[in-house]
Length: 303
Image 1 (cartoon, rainbow, N blue to C red):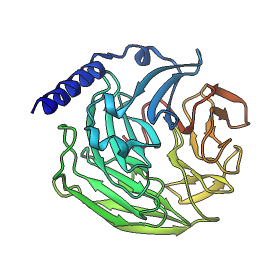
Image 2 (cartoon, rainbow, N blue to C red):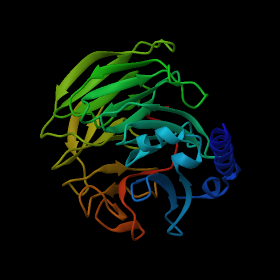
Image 3 (cartoon, one colour):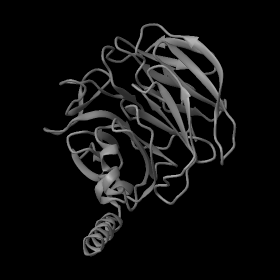
């Protein structure tokens, strides 16, 4: 009992540290990027103007139970959602989490497994994730209690699950699965969410990797092992993108004045720098293991 009480007190203390970390730096940041950073198994926000990391989320300090922390090893994606006020993240360890930037509160987290690589918010607040070696999507019924061991989930088979993006205009979920672009309809059942396959298009190349909205357009950035494309969701046509082409892990863009940013591995699958479309350095910090980087902005394509 004494040991249990000590653990309980430690958890409350650590959660207090997280909640006490009220954010003003991110609110005031004019150009911030959010990083899936694997050296410290964290999500980090960096100010590209100062070149400094100004915010970080580590699961052990922010409401994730000790036995679940390993789910968040090797973060594989982080994106700003809900008008840039929250971060949605996924990790290769299988975890998915929704985090409020202001106080780092882990509003929701769950386990997808299968080397989770991406996640997206559905229209009613439920979450869908993509798992690469698991070859599936997982739809989560979400709430604001943090973790629910008995929470509803539904698996949908998909090859090489690396990405998911909700398209608010066309009311579709897009995923680029190995060599196919697949669109799903959502059933809009908040209590028992599900996805219904709509259409599929053949893609050039193989091992489709990143899929992310091109800011201010109706197109998605799409990467595979050898190329980067734009995919127009209205016409469903691909065109070559004017960026570095080979082995790109992530692409992100913003409004006028924001460069297109990419992550290209230096070692294995990670890098310590973020580049622009021509290969010029936008941000760099020695020792980091960045897998993906996104601008911290609103997302009119998905919201």
